[in-house]
Amino acid sequence: CPSSARPSRLPFEALAAPAGLDVDRDGNVYVADRGRSRIVRIGVDGAFSVVAGMPGGPGLTGERIAATRARVNAPRDVAVAPDGSLYIADTGNRRIRHIGLDGKIQTVVGEVEARDVGPFAVTKLDGPTSMAWIPALSSYLVAGGLGGRIYRADMNARVLSHAACEPGGFDDARLPAVRAKLAREFGYAAGLAYDERTQTVYASDRERHVIR
Image 1 (tube, rainbow, N blue to C red):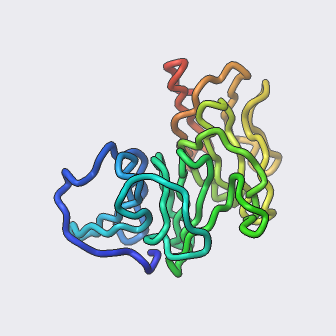
Image 2 (cartoon, helix red, strand yellow):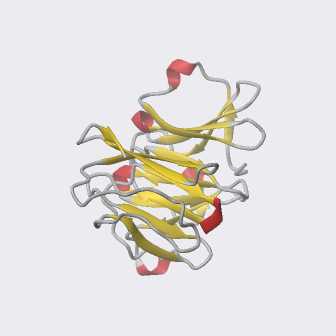
Image 3 (cartoon, rainbow, N blue to C red):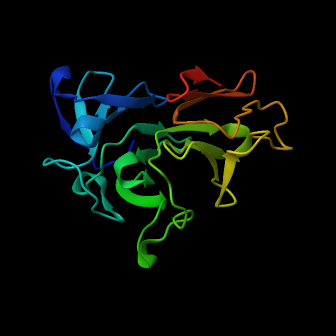
């Protein structure tokens, strides 16, 4: 896991409006604590660690510094990458941020200053809300929230593209069994999940009250 975590034991009531979560290979749980604008790690022994975010509320600070010294803004999801690093849907700041194994945070999707540009940083997101990893494509799908779009971030080619926003939805010749036919009227993309066994992408549309 990222190495800059601040360990402490806190009651579960310390979480405020927890949103997305993920589990690493060792059974540690990472939670997007939206109400307190931070990412929290709950170890297998029940110990809490703040992995990203600072006391004092939401904000946008820090690029290539320890994530515990950076501010995030109402994150809605966190994903554990295959290498054990973390990706954060920093919803309020309209970007995806990465916490490396060294504990440092960097924007990888979203608008940043030219000197801080990451591989996908030139793309504007409308409040990312959820992420799902597709191993066969070495890609994350990113739900764009109010924009009603699903993006695909190819971690090998360093390319960000619209995976679902047009009629016909998401398709890829390398993974023809993927089924995520999302129509143009897709409202608020709130959550994503990928079933590797059936190669199916599921998306929740909060505005239309449906699962697609």
